[in-house]
Length: 67
Image 1: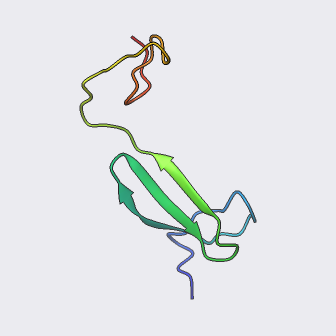
Image 2 (image 1 turned 180 degrees about the horizontal axis):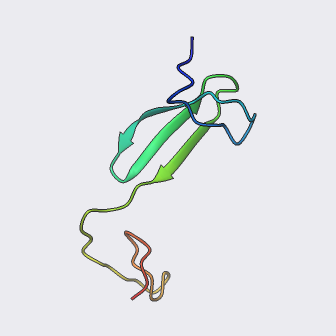
Image 3 (image 1 turned 90 degrees about the horizontal axis):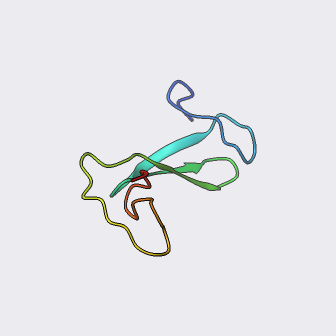
């Protein structure tokens, strides 16, 4: 049985069955227990040593913050 108090709504099927799987680096992973789709959420960095390259321009390649 799914604990619906802590479950989120799945954007794919609309059911309240999205459960947190865990965190990997700066990403939080979820899976829907009904349609088995995977979702992810960027949770950010505590402190970022900003890095830039030609491709990203004025956005940090680690956190995406503008220069």
